[in-house]
Amino acid sequence: MVEEGWKNQRVLVTGGAGFIGSHLVRRLVALGATVLVLDDLSSGGRAQVPDGVELIVGGVECSDVVEQASADCTTIFHLAARVSVPEAEADPETCRLVNVQGTANVVAAAVSRSARFVLASTCAVYGDPDSIPISESTPVEPLSVYGHSKASAETITCEAIAAAGLQGSCLRLFNVVGHGQHVTSAYAAVVPRFAECLRAGAPPTIEGDGLQTRDFVPVDFVVECMVQTAMDPGEPVVNVGTGRETSLLELLEHMQGMAGTKLQPTFAAGRIGDIRRSVADVELLHHRIGSCEPSRLEHALHAVLRQESTTSA
Image (cartoon, rainbow, N blue to C red; front, side, top):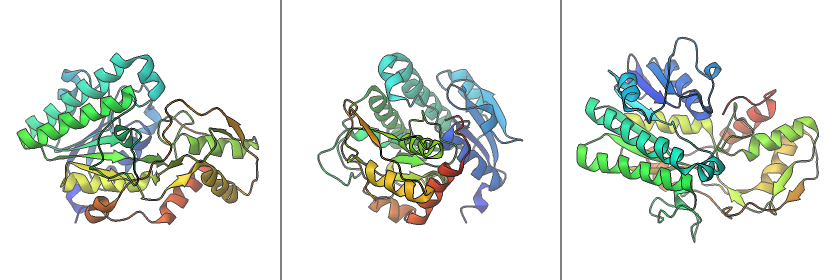
């Protein structure tokens, strides 16, 4: 069984003090793995790392740090990245240094140690595709510096899979939601933002007309996909989503029903370059992992609504 395979395994999670990374770390610990976290704490926090888990504070852009952190590891999950689109546009060199050179360093470490490897990629690599649902064969045409950097990270990973026999896979995450998201999180920030407004009784603001759609996927399902993929990498690239398309207006109405609050949103100008529709083709994911039941997303949304305040991303 997948769960039994993690006992006594030494595992590195880069970015393990962040939103998704901390959920992954807790799951791996529960499965019996010995987990190390490498994180520069630029967006994550020490409090996100469970007791008993070693935290190495440092950046993946430093090869020596990666070498130290990955020693004797049998599996590496690479989640460390600069994920803020506005920050990447303002400082593209840092974004490329961390997301591209950092990935090259971590992939090199995985190859040298014959470690299994999972890259947390993003649906941002697709840009604004002509048709939906978005399949893995959809052309990679990112619109942002961040999207370009993650596309390059995928290329590095896939080249190592083909040329060096890396046992790895790139998971293209759609809009991940769940407990612990910060309102400034790059992952589905609209969910904690709506939740904060509903708790405060303040009208939420929607950028644009609210008809733009996203594929919201619960963080516990994302973690499950990562854990199973590491054990059996399979295809080099796999979408991770639910295959269900939800507009921001539908999301707000649904969250208001959960909270028992009805607030009229205000509308602001749409963001330049905002993608109109986004939903994953999950046929490959269903074949490899299975489907994400709607109840899991309900649970994730409830968790965000219940948290007293948002924590580090």
